[in-house]
Image (cartoon, rainbow, N blue to C red; front, side, top):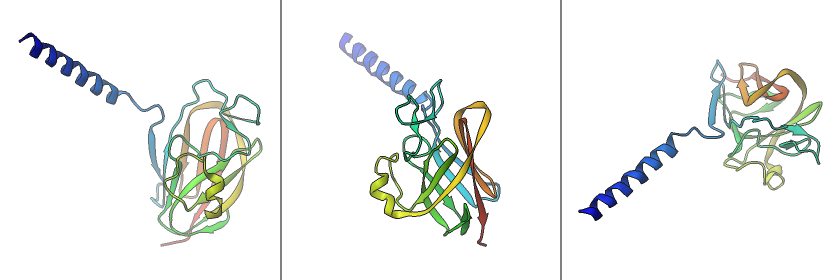
Length: 177
């Protein structure tokens, strides 16, 4: 009887621990954001600043280095879906789903849509670079107060990316119906 009681206690403890682990929120939750007109949907991992320097030059302690490909989020690379054809940063893009990669800079960012889906981070960017559908440059705006969590906001005519003291906005014009 003692062995059965001990076994039940161990099983109950293990189950309780497993449930408690599932109850913790993810460090970088997966977010889905849609534009009001439902033409743009973005799925991204949302990291937090947590006191870190986010963007900076090579050799700095920043999380993301200027000019280096970034998955624009955490974990799996960010994916952008357009329900209709769009002008993305002034360049035509067909309706579909694309991986979003950015190259943060101090004064401007490079923004890339790539046709290879299911990427983990931007570790193999050079391998997939030939599948870039569009590359645009957008200016950086400084935020007055630091933004704790990476936020990607699709509007009807733009996609805004904001984190730490940096914000960029990519113009997006709907060309389909």
